[in-house]
Image 1: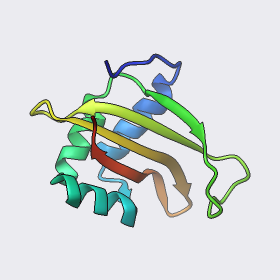
Image 2: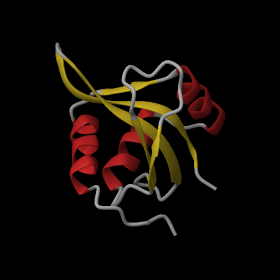
Image 3: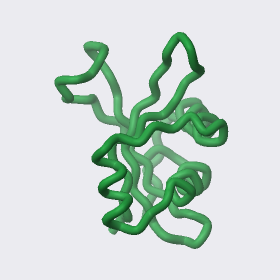
Length: 110
């Protein structure tokens, strides 16, 4: 139900490593969605670590993007209790820290 294969295993590995290292940043929208759905940061991390594939890759249309071409990765997976969770985010790199994952959307999946 959740898996739509893309050749994104390297990207998914980088997202999982960012989650394991605690290099996640949650947007205000993601925090609001989490609060509305009763999700914790732990639920989101478990979901990212349980993911077997990236569901979809889309180009960002945000006016706030830093580069001309930025991609958002949509992941649909479950936490350790089996709750389906939908996340959308982008990998970012800054000079003072390793790659981190910015979560733009984090909510229960339907």
